[in-house]
Image 1 (cartoon, one colour):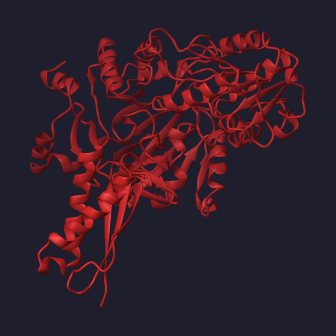
Image 2: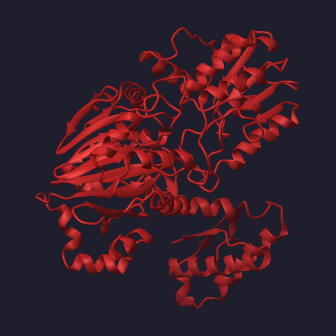
Image 3: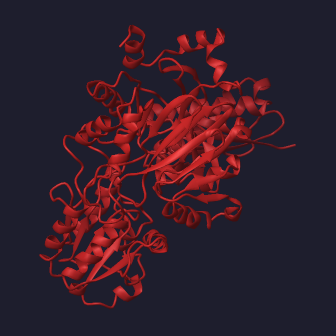
Length: 580
């Protein structure tokens, strides 16, 4: 490895170096429509798990790979869905030739209903992924306008100047694909998507490792790959092992059993049907997203011969004759399991002596919401079983042993880890170098990486950010409205109204509200109102005639007093009413 290659593999290029390159003209070549180079640009999913959005550039055209979401947490009141900010590619939307979806998970296709009207490009997906997407687009008023091209498994097709080949892999959802991307004279790039090597996935074929080895013989320029489980030794495990363990486990319980799992894990749905059959129970789907996934699976030939009871019918069965398959493994407040725990589900109840099995992993950020649901169950005398202590879930992402095997097959010249937090990406780059990959770059959202020609390097930084779904509108995550809501949640709000005459004299006592700050009958409320009046009276006569000066003086005085008394600085608004 050359000194320059080692430098590129070791650490990100700093902003000053990039700006210097831009001044010298090197950083803008990739926007030249005649540029024969191949470039990679992540706008989501690099430095985070979720919200994947990747772009490739060649000869004046952009290709998008995946368009996903992540979800809000307790720090984002009122926000459930977060998407990448597509501003950069929207500014170049005339050069966007298409969007390829690697598979049907929310963090890879969930942003399409929110962003497609800004992109308006054709979409390419395998049959199952297309079925899931169409169902999501049914909730929009433009769904029928979206051009979706269905590509068969292992299919090949062209999008603009790019030649694409799909390679079948395994994951926790049907039809996950790695993409082989060819552009001009550049060697092929393997974009893995989410994957693992499952020898017995139960639903769908096993990974096409023979094709991966053939690519390695051909010579692969770069691999852009999943980093989620880079710290986990060995292999992720097989879905077949989960089925055997769940059959044995459910057989030990005598009352009603509910299983919380990811709706998208079709193999797990088939497993739960087999578990129920083996234990003399009837499987029932509880939750809208489960029924959607069941419908999409059957439309594409999966779950053959398996029928699930509705939640209405399940409520009439004896407790020892039903197996409930529920949404809500991550503690989502509107999911079926949370509604059952909160006694707001119209058909399903759980009682002491029942069991709830969490056949899922904890997604980082969801720890508190999951704990709330599990504690509520335990308080009712319901037994809770998790994957922490029992082998009832396997990850859909490759552990270190599988990553090493993938590198042995593909043997890329360049490794670019994605789909992970910074610690995952750095460790994955280290592992790639241990696997004799000549160049390994740790990138961030917004980095434009030249893959070809020459050694891989950053040539520019572009704007990247996040959008939050606030009710029915998308706003930037730093929007003042969201900042104010966050402050309101933590510090409360004070609103005061002052009635003054033209000369600035108070014509009545100030009135106010102290939401989330003080109780209505707290004597401190009167003290604050008295302070507001004293502040006005202490102002010079000229200042009292200016509404903005009065409002600001009172606001500062009130916030200072509340901070000294309560240690809080609430959002404070002062309204001045001026009488003629």
